Length: 143
Image 1: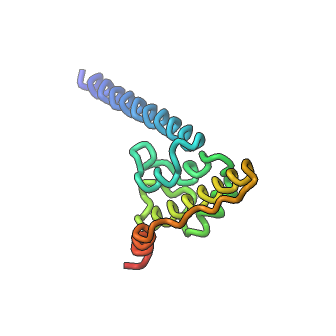
Image 2 (image 1 turned 90 degrees about the vertical axis):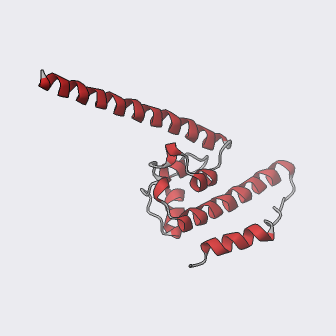
Image 3 (image 1 turned 120 degrees about the vertical axis):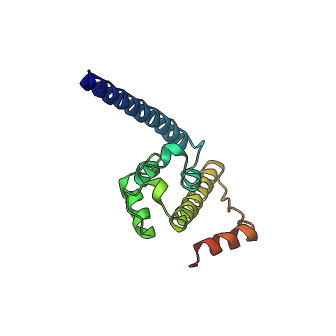
């Protein structure tokens, strides 16, 4: 009788783990679709780190963006000194700020190119407000 109770508890734990894994998988798929559609930026995910992204590899997140493959992802992460398989939730504040800044700059330049291509004019994005630029510099400078 004691043995069957242990098996039942083990099966119950296994089912709870499967249920949690399925919930995470579905939430990640939804998030990746939002990133691919442009409804959510990868920079926002890196900065705010929602629960579904905390154990996700940074390369999976980056490659969910349109026109981002393994090579582009590797090149960016190498330039920042971040391993490809690093989980989003384990990024240091400095790493996440640097990555978000680069992603924001790349998205702004890509949007400007698309706008210029469609209208025939070149749109130069306005510089960020000085306060946020100073805050970024403080965040990226060694403490």
